[in-house]
Image 1: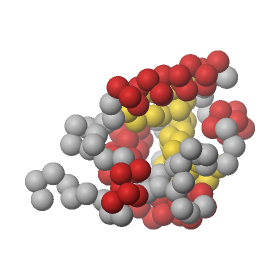
Image 2: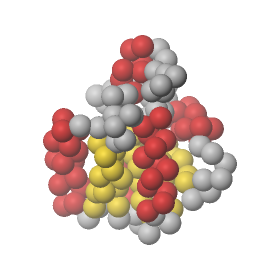
Image 3: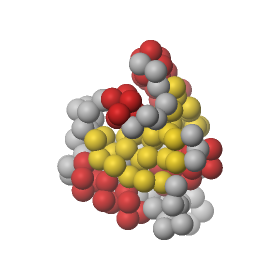
Image 4: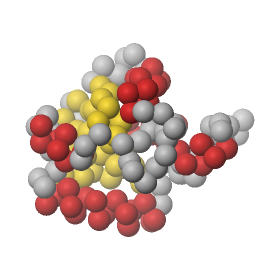
Length: 141
């Protein structure tokens, strides 16, 4: 079974990598879909972000591919015959927003699998990283 993990990934965080790692254990193939989100201002185009994501993935993760996309995620899924989206959740605020998107995507024939963030990674968001200009140090360092 194939799945898509969509996001802006601007920048890719340890939480994103954790979701990719756990999702690749659940699915035969995983596409990390670097998408355009009109509500976010990543500062770089999707192709550059996709290249950065690709460069960050361990070479042994051969079941993971990266693609840039500017349309609806459900359209990408239909065109590539992918029936499952993967979404990471950090908190109940994420859950509320993602639940609405999941319902819409389900009506379009694409199911959503939610993966909760590990507690030590839940506080890190791409928006916060952009505001700080750097990734925070891992806990205990």
